[in-house]
Image (cartoon, rainbow, N blue to C red; front, side, top):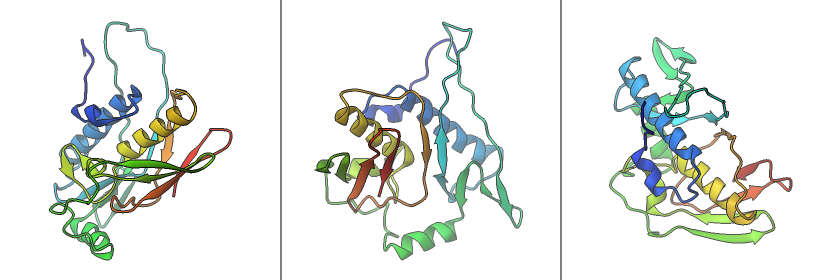
Amino acid sequence: MPTPIRDTQTAVFRSRATVLNELALSHRLSLLVGRGKYGVPEDFACAIKSIETVVHSIDMVDDYNVSLRFEVITKRHDTITALRFNVLPLSLANFVRRSRQFLDFSDVKISRDKSCLSTVADNHFRYYPSEDDRLSDGRRVDHVPTLILIDIALFVNRMAHQGAVHPNISAEFLNYTDPRLAFDIVQEKDHSAMEFV
């Protein structure tokens, strides 16, 4: 592209890390390709399992270069269940929401209008999500989205360590993050990793 692409979602990111724009674009393109090329229905939920960024040097200076690796990981009964992110059929997504008593997630606003971060101990914080922390492309979702979690991690890292931001990111997402509940953020002493509990 002759000019940089700005994803609309980056306006809500607090860390101001430039890598989040690339991640937001990758997220948007992945969903479009998954739904368009592989026929993932609109009512199927998609959950990112992992993200990895790598800095590459490129020859072009005045252009914007984005590459996206996309592959089908697993199928079940001829239905795609993972495209480098989990694909949940509506029945399974509803089962997860019902088990967490959150079937009405799209209609219910959570009580906190402003998020809150408190210090528990050295390298240990507690985060209370707000309504904005559960928005994905302007729509309410039943979890704190991956990009918001990465943004929070970068923000906490910058705040705790006087602006240090690492250009490469590797993130794994093992569990659903409920926006109605506070969660702990624990950073390893060498600052190499951050865990959301």
